[in-house]
Structures are given as structure tokens and as C-alpha cells.
Image (cartoon, rainbow, N blue to C red; front, side, top):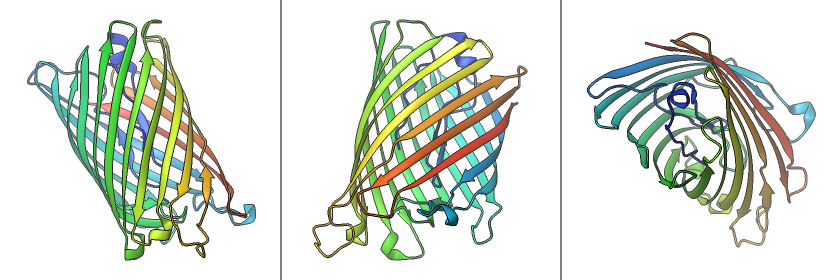
Length: 311
């Protein structure tokens, strides 16, 4: 659940920047509504989301793979309090075309300070009936509560360093799957090329503790990313994330004893502003999982396309 730390320096960047950290089958984390507001003023937008999940259930046999679609709708609101502080709120819904998968609902409330030197954002997020694969890479729907925060500091003009962390609790109908997850990461971004090109790197570590203890694991990873704004109306991003998961059970008879996995992921984002109020988003991610346990390798991908209208 790596959160990308961002800078809002530069008028064109403020207009174009769109940030998404998609957790496949779990929560979708979006930034505040695009743009900025003057002190005491507010802004809002609504986003229609069209999803295409390839191998949604993460089948390890190609003949068992299922591709499904989903439609989402999200409303986002932000109000500038004073100086650079904002409060923001989201409400969302996601409906799947697959029978047996309930519609997922979400809400978020947070506070941000998009300063030029110091930046931070904290929020509480609640998802109901959200598809989750965090327990053994197997499907389930969970009610998930997340508390997260991120902070970055502009070091001189060229460098931006950041820290981020989150805690979440997932509750399932099957209590054996109930779990908590924690994560802490650090990142660095280079801004010496100007707002049109920004490379960045980061590392993180975390764990997930599950009621069925043999499913618990530690996780660590790193990422490299490049953001490009070739035109004031176009934002592009490419990010490669490497994740390593090690199961922590000491029960020698468990199938997870000594189990480890690699979860590399490539994510691409394009945000195109076609009018002062309308922006189009395209997001694509692909994951190729390899496991030390025979017969547990799989591949999946996600395509998201959606217009966003600002009020």
C-alpha cells in the first residue's frame, strides 16, 4: 500500500496532476479534487470509473482465469481552510458484473497541507464489501478501515524526501481471515529537471497479521517512478514496484512453512485534460506473481478508464 508523495509546486502541475494508488481488489486511493482553492472556498468533482480486471480471482491455471468488469462512481470534495490547509471527503461505490460479488461502498475523510516546503496528508478511509486478496492470494470481501498519513519535505530546490505509513483492519464473514496490516515507507524525488520530468525512488516494509496465524506474512519492497508533463493538459507516469512476501509461520507441517513470493508490478497512468472542467484518466497495471510453493504462480492486470468532471 505504498502512497506516492507529491509536490504541488508549479501552476501547470497543479492543474494536471492525478495520483492513484490502486490496491487490486481492495481500496482505491485518490487524491483531493484536482486544482486548488482560495482560502474559505471549496471545489468538488465526480468521476465515472470503468474497470476491466483480467484474471480477477488470481487463478493459477490459465483455463480457470476469469475476466470481469466493474463500474464505479466517486464524488470528491475539498475546502481550503486557511493558508494552505484543506479538509477533504470522498464517497464512492463500485458495482461488479459478476454474480456473487456485492457492490462495494467507500468513504474517506482527511486533512492536507500542500505547502511548498512542508507537505502532509492524513486520512481515515472506510470500505464496505471491498474485494480483498491479502489472505493467501484468495478472494474474499471485507469491510476495511484504514488510517494513513504521509509527509514530505522539500530539501533545497532539487530534492524532496518523504515518509509515509498506514494501518488497516479487514473484517470478513469468516473470522479466520480477519487481519491487520501495517506499512512504513520512505521516498526521494528529484526536482532539478523542473516540473515536466520528475523521477523518484522509494522503499517500504510492512506486515499482515491474520487470525489464522499460518497465513501471516512480512512484506518489503521498493519502487522507481518517472512522471512526465509534456503538455499543460497531459500528465504521464510509469512506475515499477518490486514486492517480496515471506510467510512467518513456524509450523513445519503448514503448506506456508518457508513460503515466499515475488509480486513485481508495472503501473502506467495517463491523465488528459480536454476542457477546463473535464479530465480523462487511463490507468493500467500488470502483476506477475511467482511463489516458492509449486503451482501458485499467476498473472493479472487491471485497466481503468474514466472521465472526471470538476464543478
